[in-house]
Image (cartoon, rainbow over all chains, first blue to last red):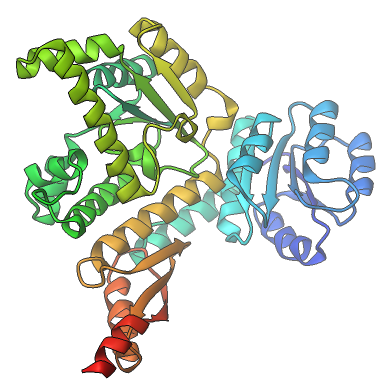
Length: 148
Length: 274
């Protein structure tokens, strides 16, 4: 990929950034990780990101607030919401407000890889590293005989 | 990309709306033809599958437990197909087991009551008043059926995202409204809703496998993990846990099984009284 996908990752639990950051980097993304949503919002005002991955339940600003801010600043940016408190109502609210995807915690790294790859595709960007990882996952799934 | 589950108080009119909706959106239609497949794959009589979807359990009808098992086979097969997305589902009770799947639009279509009565009168050769009475009874039976097997009242509008009355809307208009709603962002598939559907499909597959041997079993599935609850006497506890674990593990997609035992105090009391 000529220009790496710029991804912002916001979660007030540092462990999430520590785990997800390398997953996204391995896909070829250029990732910036934040634990404070207010700091992340300041950064958003300076720099446009292709994808924002944000937790929903955070203290200062919640994920829905982040989503609204991102959409106001950069309508093309794809926002992926993650939460440990997923319900049908929250999922509907997030989608209605423009979220690109919604993932319940805990999730497998491949769920995030797939969501980010789809976001890249929707933006018209190609991610050869992501495609290679997907093929690898499909082969592993087929070998194990389990449905994905 | 979404799923549309249509339910109707008149089978032919609901089928017409489902077919038109599928055609208008370019979606596939999943309907009663699935029953032939279920019958063939699982060695079940097709007419009993139809009966399970239509009849209220009663003294002279099918045994409740058997009906529940047949409905589980239908549910498992239907959910499996719905994983493919972009489908309109009709006549398989999907509106009752897609609850909680956010990309499933659940629609209830109400036929014009007089027309429904006229259809029934013509079909059975009844006078209109008797047909109207019979319809009332049929509606009550549907209520009982849905409450018995899905713990929900099929007639309750709160069960649906949308209720359309064909007494007030032309079929074309009803289809247009459904297609329009299917395009709402809220009904688009996402990682979370696909996972909900996968979990429901797995739970139904495992239940269909376990229910004949453990009729009181309850279970949930998440990401390949199955948590089952089963009643047991203290002395049978370990044997039962092992049996549930072994059977459930045979279902493709199951990676881990946890079996929780609920003590069967009535059984225990009966045993100690002997």
